Length: 369
Image (tube, rainbow, N blue to C red; front, side, top):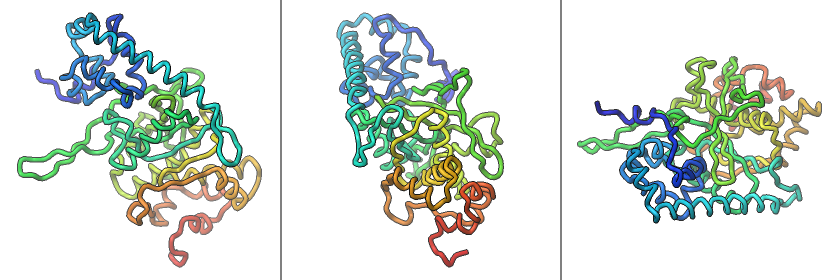
């Protein structure tokens, strides 16, 4: 029987490797290998055919490489030396990157550190082609940003969404027309750790969306020294439509987009609180995470008993914004009724705003009611 790609992906990724190759297992859990000299080539050369079949996923490569091939490479002195040298460079890299994290500060004089890092928010991350969380330039920029931050030792954590179907891959039919193909992402087959709470249960967050609680579990990808946290609503506790909040990157209609942005912005802040992190600065890369500013304001209002105007000043001091697409088509606009349906009546009240004041925060045309 011929197995389909999805059936092959569902194979277990747990396999005990020969002793001389066992460090490949540890390397496969950190995307550092993807930009390290000889990193990708070392995995590829274990079995080039399988490497292509598994779409350059090192976890699947180790699982699907035959016992014969593993035994063969485990006795190849040249290959063993390459693995050992790669592991040594990885260990040196991680030690140096961690040491550099103590050296950073920014203009206000506030120090970055592990508990007060830069929190980087983006809707897509092009870390590597084996984890389909990107569609193009914005994602590649974000992925490179994480790698650069790791290289120079910036204390940075990243927040995004784990899309079940990612973004489509392009195929061409014989008549020359493009076909879109969405593959199913299986997080247990990727270098992703499910984040756990103190009691060992899956850590989760909750956001009220469309007047019902939407829950998300959390995965972590390690990009050198930088952790990338990914929210995932594809869990049984959610209604079917809410499980698809993290279904497709840039898929669906305007309603899909706004609920994704609520999860990324509001849910992302709530995740940081569950992780007991207090970032020094929040970096919004594009407007997809803009609702995090509302959540920060809500926190200040609740904790200090201040009004929205004063809370907004505090939020402004801690946020920076960068854009990759400075044109109208690259910036989202939502109908007021859609905002009303998705946020419900209570969020504006928690901000101590009337509905009209809440809508005015983002209204493009003040005359448009």
